[in-house]
Every structure is written in structure tokens, then in C-alpha cells.
Image 1 (tube, each protein chain N blue to C red):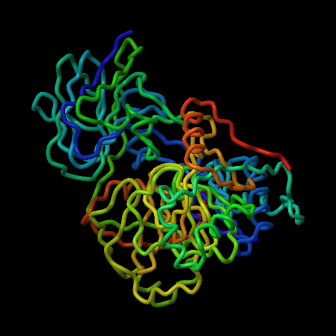
Image 2: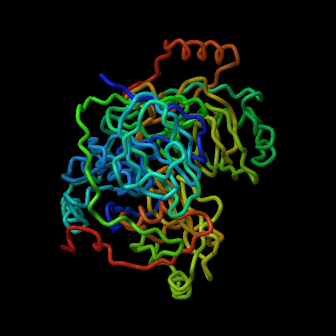
Amino acid sequence: MDVLPYGDSALLINFEQVVDDKINSQVIELSTLVNKLDGVDYTVPAYCSLTVGYNNIKTNFSQLSKEIKTLEVSNSKSQRSQRTVNIPVCYDSEYGLDLIELEELLDLSSKEIIKSHTEATYRVYMLGFVAGFAYMGALPEKLNSPRKNEPRLQVPKGSVGLAGLQTGIYPTDAPGGWQIIGRTPILTFDPAKELPAVLKPGDQIKFYSINKEEFESISTQVENGKYELEVSNA
Amino acid sequence: MPKIKLEFIKTGLHTSVQDLGRLGNQAYGIPVNGAMDKSSYRLANDLVGNKPGSPVLEITLIGPEIRFQGSGQIAITGANISPMINGRRVKMYNPILVNEGDRLKFGKCLRGCRSYLAVRGNWEVKKWLNSASASTVDGKELTPDSIIQEGSVISVHDSSKSVNARLFEGKKPSYSSNQTIRMIAGPEYEQLTRNTIEDLFRKSFSISQDADRMGYRLNESLVDFNPENEVISSGIVPGTIQITNSGLPIILMADGQTSGGYFRMGNVITEDLDKLAQMKPGDQLRLKLVPYHYNSSENQ
């Protein structure tokens, strides 16, 4: 674990620079502990790094890095308070804008792509890019998808995409270069809530396929505020 | 309770309500937002006796036209965009009394880029996550009052009875279109080659036309920039200087995104972020390296 200065009011903790569930668990665990230290304003947990913003009148780099180095992060694959969120996705070609293109790129049928995408369980590594956007992974190797050559100026809200070995859901309409394979009717960013991001780093995610009728019916529930996130606790 | 209303006849180039922003939500991908030049922002509120953290208007290069309904007290700090009330120039860094029907207009931007207009009292604006700052996340929905449009009206309740005018005694900042901006070496700085480092501190960079509240792009790319490793998406903070794969530096500002996968060569020190916020497209800057504890309690 390297603690590096990151401007005059932040520091960066770099873990081994790889995408790995165990390392990401440690980042998230450390984030919770660091947030309790005096003078810390915020943290930004990422795949294998933790950004820590601090008030440079209350503390400083030497002081804070000393305190951080005394914190104990478990070495075992921490599964505490881990939940699995089940997310409905309609993979109809109306929403899966790049399915046809991907069939050729991956040499798989749409059916096989959907089967693969729904079989695996993914981990939310971090939130970023736009508010509430969850970076999830890892995809099975056969779904390893190149980004689009020309990013779309606007990817519709709820779109489910692939990029490399990552999968993600666009929480709002946003520009982006991910390959879009379907759309979820649920909200992954709800500003009306105290914590607007619905998914959290460390969450386990499972997608399941729905048809267009089910998509419409869940959309209506979401609009009426009747939809409840499908969560199961490990 | 007396009330003053600001009615926007013209919006100006980019006029928004700002305060200190919504620090602490970056873990969810929510940018900090808030006033770009914090020192001018604080001073404006101070001059009218508002609490620190109160909302103000941030005005960029071309000012709005405002008609006041009711009377109250205002102050203008930051960039000099030739403010005038009823056609007469008014003094900046000075509390000003305004009356029913007065019109505030701006003229040529003489110095700086962003002007701050404080109005004494409590602002009636919708907040999101404890901040009135115009949000870059669905701002029209979340902070509708803070994105100034033609016909917008902002009401401010003024509870103080007397005018407690504070005169400005400090030194007014001087803005120049050619500045030295101090930076602290960033997480990937060590990976730069000697050639790139030499180039970095020798070059004068010009600020591109794309410079806005999200980030300042610089026009000149760095020589010999060929990073070996790709950066795995990681946190970024206002002031982070990223380099794109083609070697172009981008300095992230108040509305910047919270994470990214570009090379991070350094961070502008907090004090100089205010200076940078007053620079505009076409202005020139040089970077200067300072030690990481330059601006902190470790150095005192």
C-alpha cells in the first residue's frame, strides 16, 4: 500500500494496480475506516486505489498518512454486509443497440451473449464517470468487448453496456462508448433519495432477462414509486 | 420580512448560483461543484454580512442584466466586468445599496473571468445534497433556481435592520492573462521522462476555447509523452492535471468528474485554483513545481 500526496488537500492510497475482488474489498473497507479519521472530508474508493480528501487546516499529509498506516484491513476476502442485487434487463434489439454488431465482433449469437451476461455474478467495483454509474465486472472472457470507435453522443438512461471485461448501467442519458446490449427499467440513480446512488461499491449484481411487457410493467411501478429493489443478503 | 427580488432580463454567458459545493458525495460519482474562485466568493458574502457558505451569483465574462424589486444590499468581487447600476459604474469590493427598479448591467470584461455577486439575506433557492450550487447532474431538475435563464427570479429575504457595511481593507487580487500556476507532483509524475519534465516547466501553455467549469484544456501537448502503463480508473479531485493519451494537459475544475483513467501528472495548489478560475481562453500559463507540503500546516 503506497500513500502518495495528491495536491495540498488530498492523498492517494495505491494498492497493487490490478482489478481484483480481494483488493477492491480492502479499498472499500479502508474507505470506511479512513472516513472516521479527524480532518477527512471525503473518500473516493476506486478499483485498486482510495482518494482521501482532507481539510489541510485540521490535518496534513504526514499526520494523516501515519494514521492511515496504523489501520488494519483484513486480508481475507471480506464478505461482510454483502448483498446481491437482482437487476431486470430487457435484451430486446430495440434496447440492445449493439447486439447485432457484437454478434460479429464476439462470434456469438445474441442468445449466447445474453445467456453469458445473465449467468455470471458481478461485483460493483466503484462509482464514477457520471453520478451513480457503477463499474461492474468481471465479464466472462468471451464477452470481452472493444469500445465503440465513435462514442454515442447520448446513450439512453438505463442502458446496459459492455467495455473490455466491464459491464455497467447508464444511470442517466449520457455520452458513452460502451457496447449496449439491453436496458433496465429500474432507476440506478434516484436524486430524491438521501443517498441517490442505488448501487454501492462491493454490491454483488446479477442480471436477469425480461421481455418487453415485463419491461413496461416494471417501468410503470418505477414511475409510481412502487418498485422495490430485489435484494438478497448473503 | 423585507424581501428583495432579482429578475433576470438577460442571462449573460454563463450565470449560476454557487456556494461551497457538495463536498463528500464523490464516492457516488457526484461532482463537488461550487464557486470556482473561492476567495472572491467568500469576500463577496463577507462584504454584505452574509454567513460563510451562503449562495452568490457566479458571472462569467459576459454579465447578466438584473432588475431589482425591493431594496437591499449587494457586493461584487472577482473579475471586473464593468458593473453599472442604472448606467453608472459602481465600485467593486464595496457594499452597494440598491432600490426598487434599479437595473444592474455589466459591460466589457476588463480583468479576470468570473465575478461574484452577493446579496444580503437568505436566498430562496432549492438545494440538493446541502448545496445551492448549480448541479451538473440533472441540474434543471435538482437545482432549477440555480441555473439562470431569461425570466428567472431569485428572492432573498433580508432580516437585518441596519446596513452593516463592511469596507474592504485587504489587497484586491490582481488578475493577469499571463500567470505562473503552482503544482504538486501527482501520482504518475515519476513515470514522466526527463524530456517531458523539462518541456513541462519550460513551456508556456495557452488555455483552450473549451475551458469551462468542468476543466481547462491546454492547447500545447507535451513532448515525448509515452506512458508505459494504463491508469486503472481512480479518483480525481478539482485541480488534478491529467494528460490525455495524445499528451494534452487538462486541469480538472469545480464541476470535474470524480474519477478517470488518464495519467495524472500533478495537482494545482488550492490557492492557485482561485487564480486559475480567473483565467480565460487564450490566456497563458506556466507551471511551477512546489513541494507537497507547500500550502499546509506542515510548513508553518
